[in-house]
Length: 325
Image (cartoon, rainbow, N blue to C red):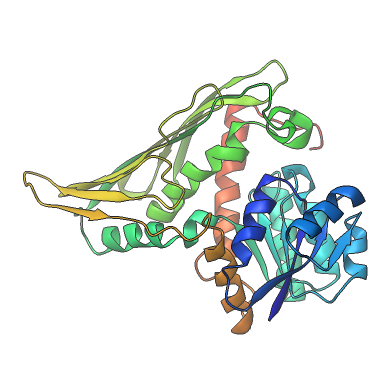
């Protein structure tokens, strides 16, 4: 039984904790927050035996096999290093680091110490996403020609500070724009050319980004992320013989349809939800640890390096810089 801990006890941590109950061979043993009161409340709700009122005290508790990091972006690198110092495998919420330099340092450290590290791009592990990629790879839409994808929600008074504050690594790109960029990379590989434009809030975070990635063979990925509107958050991948249409919220456990050109023929995939969807990445980590792997074969450290190379270049193009850099 693999004993997990969670560092950072916000909304996504609650979902991960709930889904961990669905993972064969895993149990939530410890949680850590900067507040003892918050850690105690979380531990009581999820029946966790050890609650730490600081991140450092987590390692004074029961022995751990894995840590899930769910704090704001700006603290990810420091906490990954802390876990690596204790030789504990890590699954870190995206983005693993604020920029490519941070990610390169973390990857180098994990590989040097031979300790498991994975960036939690949970969409990659969803059965619905894997099924869509299998169909595309098998030629269901012919030669792939391009894709269009978006992700948008509207900021309001209750929007979390980690999204609205520049000093916390906030903004659209690293919080939600990472998903469309990830999709293009999984489908087409690294881009050869990047074009991007953005609009900024008064606080200096990017709130509306349009990105065009050109990939090998001239394939284009047209991507959009925004904090100014609740969009359908759809994705479309088109090819020489047909098109794959994801339903709304394509990055979740969503359905998709493949339609053939000049034909009534279509294939409809209906997802079978499993909790919130986070159990799949946790289960994949457990299987990797059982097999003695130090990286995920589905989302490797090289994949993270490629992704953050692209994200850092996009930031350079739009002029987005964080105070801690």
